[in-house]
Length: 127
Image 1 (spheres, one colour):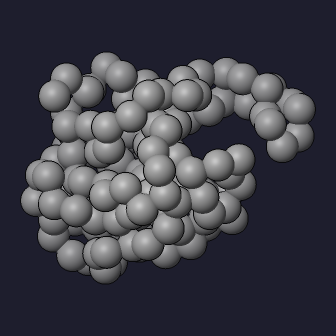
Image 2: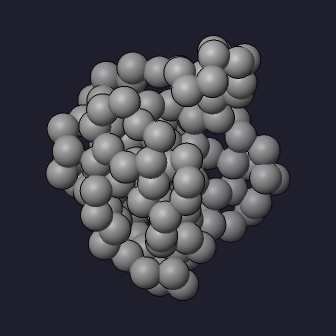
């Protein structure tokens, strides 16, 4: 998944940080990309949608399985444009950015999981 899902400044990096909600140390398992609410979110690689719904922390969320034990997760969405089980292509619009779940403002939370473990997305984003 080498394509940026949205263009924007990264306002929170991957790694350990103080939770803005609890004040405790936690792993921020992705990056937060600043974007106005309603900005199109695009699939970074082809895959199958494994989640198109709501979660307590990320609000409206999409997850895509890209095969080879690589999954991407997109959180705090305003609108989901895909369905569970749907095949998506690289660059296909999958959602609109928003401010749902535990969010302090409009942005996209973007995670990459390899073998179920979060990895820094910056190591994968080159176009």
